[in-house]
Amino acid sequence: MSVSGFELPLPSPFDFQQCLKYMARSPIECLYTADSEGVNRLLRVGTSQRLIRLSCRNNNAMQIQLLRGDALAIREQEELARYIRDWFDLDRDLEPFMQLSKGDPFLWPLAESFYGLRVVGIPDLFEALCWAIVGQQVNLTFAYKLKQRLTEQYGEAAEWEGGTYRLFPTPERFANVTIDQLCSLQLTRNKARTIIEVASCMTNGDLRREELLTLPDPESVDKRLTAIKGIGPWTAQYVRMRCLGDQTALPIGDVGLQNAVKQMLGLDRKPTPRELRDLFEQWPGWESYITFYLWRTLY
DNA sequence: CCCCAGGCCTGTT
DNA sequence: AACAGGCATGGG
Image (cartoon, rainbow, N blue to C red; front, side, top):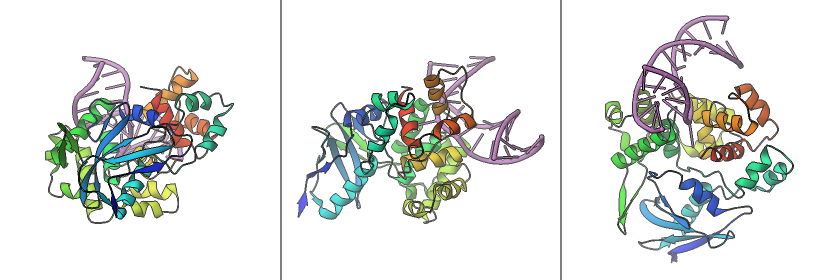
């Protein structure tokens, strides 16, 4: 038994349009193409590449179509469904967040403006780590360029109807890549070294997503990740938020978060780390959602 | 030439 | 623990 498409039921609140708007924010995004009605993406399912399109007629169910290739075996469908649920954080109940927001002068405008937006995930650990690393202390425009160069240089690609679709490279792909080669893509030496180190750790099994997910608390995850030179607190929290589904992650040193809070509160300076912690103490468990929504106010 | 950007490391208090 | 300075890289 096999299928060339299937549906996933959606939680409430969920707004696919909000997610698409987020995903369409960069004109040089290289890992998928988002339009006003859906998103196309090349994914690895099992050992093969699959080109899929996601769309939503209403917000009750998401349609997943295979754009070409053999139908999916049931096992493959399950794997793909798992990926998509992580991608759009479909297993989370946002009702408590909406309740928390009601009557909250800081939260309500966010919850209302971005109603139904999910923390869009990066389920692949290597991709999430690399995206965080290239995004350290550079503006987003440049971060997207670096991701694009890494992907075009080292990732697999497939053509479809005149467009090119790409997979983010695997850690194994970097086994014989040198720091100088990555530096030629305009990565700093530190970033190049860190990416190669992360790739090596993942290839030899020292660093695995499943293992991070079994650690007892967020602090253990931070500790494991920051043990790698070049991965600091910001990157660890970013990965917890975008890859591990940990919605208590609060990237306190994030300049975007600081600027967004400054604007929201009408401050004449960026909030201090202490002030940010104090502010977020009111909303335990929703740090990542609030951060993600705050980032959305910036663009 | 300036300041800024979804930081990190190392060394001091 | 918390802060300060240096560092590397492009964008505006």
